[in-house]
Image: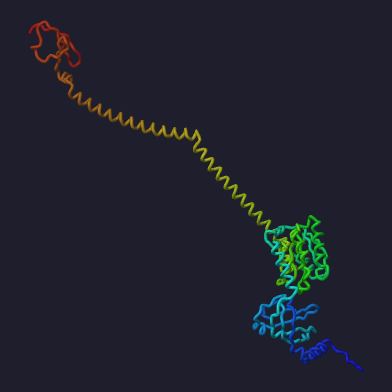
Length: 398
């Protein structure tokens, strides 16, 4: 029998036609647990439906999704009505969902919730137990798969942001049997290096089964007990595992964890320059303030110094002296004027002034002024006062 050689496109087209014409595959009802659920910005829903041994990729377009009356989330047990279709370009098939009914919660998700509740009650998630990250770490440890995309993302971010930081990578299993113990060994190994200041645990996205290693209780408790701060970047932004709650900081992705931990060299330099400028301005402002305080103290001391006090008192004395001199001069002038007036008045009334007209003044022996001749007798001595002098005389005849 001759079989024609087919192209990939023809094979995928043939498989698509076979499935499209299958009655069962075009009218399915499937029961399983929702895993790796994501809602696209377009409104379409993407997730996996799994049971104990298999899974199938599912999509529900927004027209059907808008009619849902349940909240889709990982771990939810559902019954789905839909069709199996082939995506010919990729050669893959998936379930196109039309109706979804809630059946319960999956076993893995129930286990996740139970452990989360237990650790939360013990206080392992409390903020006061979170260790602060170093501002400028010099050496960083990374626990991840040596062959996965996560390590490439971390290294690329590290090179771009700060190539001067040392990185020590602990190659670990991040999926499957023994992976959680391997991550614990990585923590213990890196903690022995006292120069490692922070540890990143990284793993790319995946289903709840693929990320189950990070829901391990022993791993969660070891992260809690770690003396070195630990940052987790496990899965995608919507993926949450137990280690995310117990770690010191949860990043949505491995790249985001690296962005947080590896401080940008340019930003550090900028911070240093800004702090230098702030410090310089603060010092200048402080010096200016202290100078003003010194000048104020100096002025206060000078104002209250004995020399200033004495000089001020001298000024006051001079002012008082000047006022006193002015007052004395004024008083003397006033008294002189009064005296002159009194002298003029006295002179005008001085009986001796009549002597200038040729008159004389006669006094008896007792010095009394003789007003009439009756008071005199013969042989009596008298004094006759003239304008320019006086004479002694004796009365011979009366």
